[in-house]
Image 1: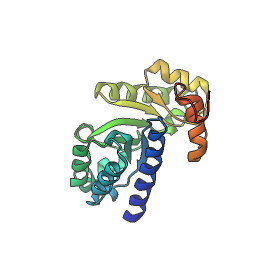
Image 2 (image 1 turned 180 degrees about the vertical axis):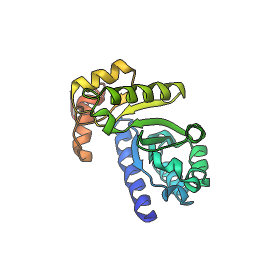
Image 3 (image 1 turned 120 degrees about the vertical axis):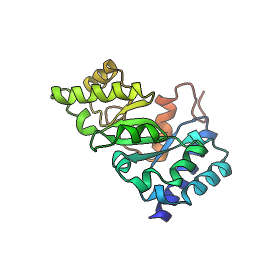
Image 4 (image 1 turned 60 degrees about the vertical axis):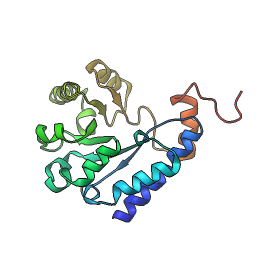
Length: 201
């Protein structure tokens, strides 16, 4: 498991460096498990990878699930502290599906909270889910963190989230999954309009 995560991190950093060299300074996220947070070698792999490619720590984000907050060894691990010291941003994924302690949430060096898609997709049909999403957005703002809605599939949902004050959103409404080459073209044409594609006028 560790070797796979290390490989994914290195591959992500290699692609991120390619984008940065092309004047597309995006942040790339990698999923991390509770076991990864117990891997004392993970921070070293990340730090060496960043240095080798001339990337800042903010170029890479690690996504962890809310359930990790219930895993005391992972939550309190030296790896989490080392990642925070290195400046690696952490994102808490699938928020709202677990039973996390707000005390633990506040102590964890998380910069971003992702609202689980199971609530977001029913936003227009369920008053209860709308209340939950709004409450999470308000809580995240109060904690001084960034809110991200997952699973946005239509413009109405995107507009509702904007009205609620959600900071960002992701889902098929914005783009489908794509490989690195396709993503590069997409970034040039849409996400980074001020950057010209190679060979462009």
